[in-house]
Length: 261
Image (tube, rainbow, N blue to C red; front, side, top):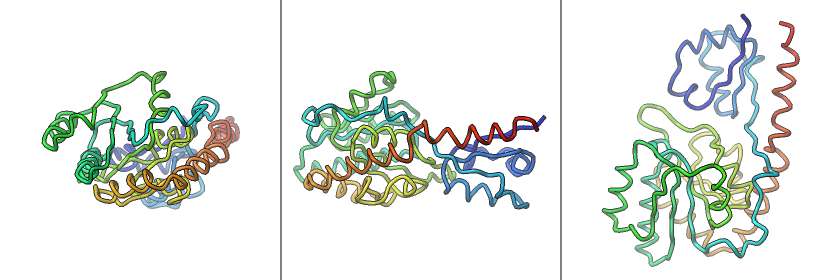
């Protein structure tokens, strides 16, 4: 039976079950980043480059839109959304909030999501006495997420490579935040640089560096012109290159071409 498959972050770097065999047998393979595609190509002894295709995820830019008025955004309100897992790097974000707090920079930070690191993060917040500044909100329904995107001032996702080799690919929440005109700060440990040019559509920092995260947050707090420019260019990039109505077209073409095989 002919088949194709899509390789996401977990499939590529963590769960590699029969990966060389699948790469050789599949009619085509989809990867959502060039970073991941290049890694996949190395997993087969044969040259499979002609059937491993890059097709980015997309967001619906008609749904993920900026607020009608930026005046509703809460100054210095930092937002992050993701599973509370090691590869998201949330301890680094909490440590960055501690650095900013010690510098008397008034910030609040909400982390939306659930996961196995919740207890660790709660203890870290307690140890740093940041209970008033950093909140773990747990899981929130998708229909309520837009309110957080519209209220926030900065979006931070400090992804890292884990000791097991696990990492994120190209997190959808970065695209959602950018589409809603929310300036983002993230690491460059994976495919983020395919989405963001540093200081144009967002800020890229080194992984596992709370100090760099803190400096990037402070930069966007102080430099309102940069904050506004990133807003504009991030939204433009989502509309031009990552709108789901555009990113779905090459996948439809592949399926159409292979329909009779």
